[in-house]
Image (spheres, rainbow, N blue to C red):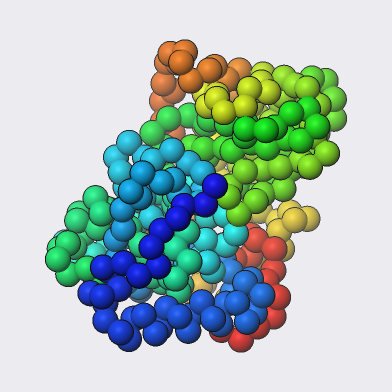
Length: 318
C-alpha cells in the first residue's frame, strides 16, 4: 500500500551532505521518541521551510488517493504527516517564483518537519527545477475548494465483518467518521496511517450511512454507500463552507490560548446550511457537479494550533 520511493534521490545530492545528515538526525530523533513526538499537521499560519521534488514513477502515495488531475501534490515528513491525519488537506506554498496550492498526498520518511517534498509540477511553479532545493513558506488552508464533491472508496477485502473506507475531497482535516448499516446504530471508525477508516469488527452488510466531521465541527452525512470494494462512489455532498474555529470534542482537547496569537474579532462567517444527504453513485455514472462553497481567504483564516485538534502527543523535547 505504501509508495516505495528511493531514499537517496538526486534532490539529496543537490542539497548537499549537510541536508542528508539533518534528515537522518531528524528521523532518528523521531524514532527515539516512539514516532509520535511533536506529530501534528501543519498550522494555518505561514511557517518557513524548504522544498524538494520527486516523481511517483507509477506508484501511489501513502494517503491511498488518486493522483490529482492537476498533478499538484506534496509529501510530508513523519511528524507533519501525523499518521495520516494530514491526508487530503491542502497547503499554500510560496517559493522564489510564486505560490502554489498542493494536496497532501504522500509521506516522505526522510523529511524532517518543514521539509516539503513536492511533485515536480508543483515545484516548477514556485522554483527553478535545476536548483533542486528552495526556501519556502507554507501553511494549511482552511475551507479550500475541492475539484469535486466527497467520494468514498471501500477497500479491497472489506466485508460486513471488516469495514474499511477511504474518504476524499473532504478539504479540511477530518476528526471523526461514523458508520451505520441500514437502520442500525452508528459505529465509530478509526483512521490508519494509509488513510483508510476501519471498523475491525465490521459495520454490517450495508448499504451504509456515513457521518463525517472535520476539525472545525463541520459535518456531512453520506447515504446509500454500498459494500462495493475497489469502486470509487461519488456523492453530491461537500463539507466545507461552515465553521473555521476548532471545536472541542471528547476526542480532541480544546485549543490552548497563547500570547503569540491574540484573539481576533472577525465578521460572522456566512451560516452554513446543513449538508443534504445524497446517495453516492458508482464511478462510471455521470453526476452533475455541485457548486463549490466559498473558500476562506488567507485574511479570514483563524490563528489556531491544529495540534490541539489531534490527540496530545507523548511529552518529549523537540
